[in-house]
Image 1 (cartoon, rainbow, N blue to C red):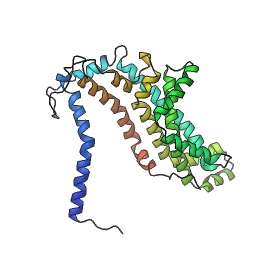
Image 2: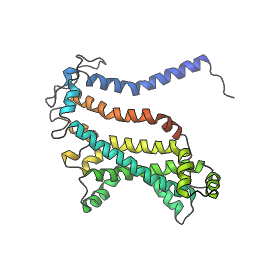
Image 3: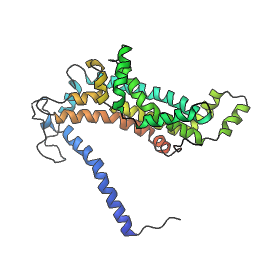
Image 4: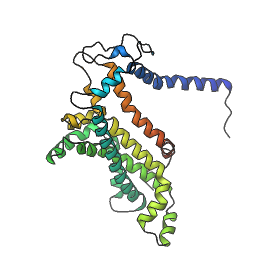
Length: 290
């Protein structure tokens, strides 16, 4: 039985939650204010710096969005940046899911030599800073002559996302009773058909989590991108945010407008997958010993 909370405890809990929510809501409101303020459309003269800390625009305008759409970088349109981001994020999510589902199933259902050390290594990769992959990947991709390409970003981001996908899917499969698969196989079903018809629907929330995290990682990452990309037409939308810094200051209005454009696809994806993502986050436990 749960202990009934007193009204003082309920009030204090609500106040703490409301105070904590301010740290999430206020930056978004401030970004909206900057994006719709027509007085903050300076590009590189330094005049784009906000003069006050109010949350209401001094002059309501969509000029910042027009500037972000027409000239986010010196030589790439916003539509091109969106296309690059979708290719990179979608490719990363797809590759991560393929690797995560196949490897996760193998770790969950089969015993083979080196299984536990390999599983432990994927856990180590989860703790490895992404910057630690910069030098080896730079040399590897440069030798393959694919460094300055969208494929290079997909491979780099997938290397970061795959360990998480493996653990997420593996933990979810462990919750599924093996007897369900064995019963289906006794009826004549092959392993691929059994997985597709029985196991996959049961672990779909965890698959959604792995795909969403992989997509979001590739969509929002920009620091590693500038290490591997030097051609302007291969720049992603998140990378363009960094490129919008002016020599004399930051163009706050167009920068905030572009940041909102970056956020919207992720919010839309979470709206579509939110039910699966939330349930998938609570499915399975991370253990190596069985």
